[in-house]
Image 1 (cartoon, rainbow, N blue to C red):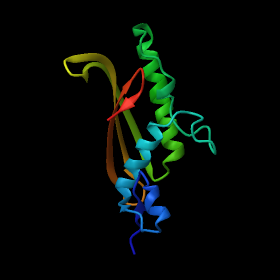
Image 2: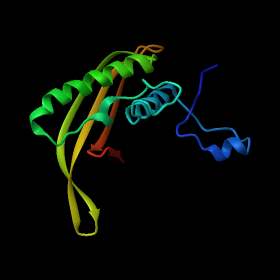
Image 3: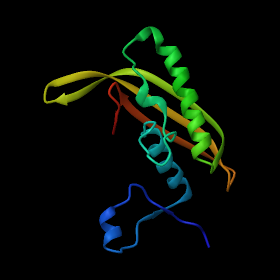
Length: 144
């Protein structure tokens, strides 16, 4: 019988009503878990303060340190994914940082820094490749 995984985010209302929670595939579960890992700051998960990444700690306003910051973020992402997502292997991560104009209010735009993340890996159980893409607006961090 194939294993199914719970879909994130959980709907707490369904739990209290004793209704079956939505399920997802292995690939979707990995993607949900990677997103959760990437959007969690260190110390946010009380039972494991090392869960998360350093994206939240980065200040991208100083251009002089951009290459060092990118390398630090890459190392943090790689360490976090290797430690907290044991269902994948052969992990390769690439990031791109650029400035984008974002509509904040009607007729008002704001320049924000956007971090694109691309994770290529292999699913251990099936030996199939998996590609995960995500992007975040940083300084301050937000995502769509």
